[in-house]
Amino acid sequence: MKDQTKLHLDEPFTPEDRDFLVRIYCHPLPGNQSVVDLSNFNSEKIQGYAIVLKQIDDLSDEQWDKIEKAWAEPEQDQ
Image (tube, rainbow, N blue to C red):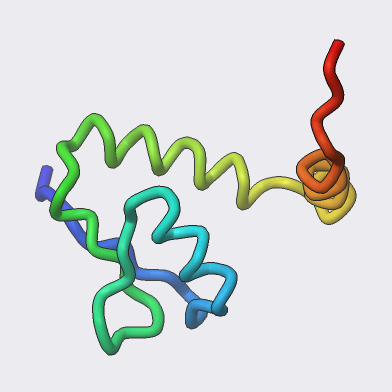
């Protein structure tokens, strides 16, 4: 199996996409609107990111709205 160190997306990044990718240490290639550089990661880490990103991609709009609302709520001490 060929090692892949670049993730090619179907659509160009939005500013929010770029912010998210930088936060998880997956930097978009400079000057490119749809490729992420994964060369700093080993195969195991790339596979882990792939699983998480696939799960995020499969969320319905309703599920994503619920997650966003939970993130927006201030933490409450229990």
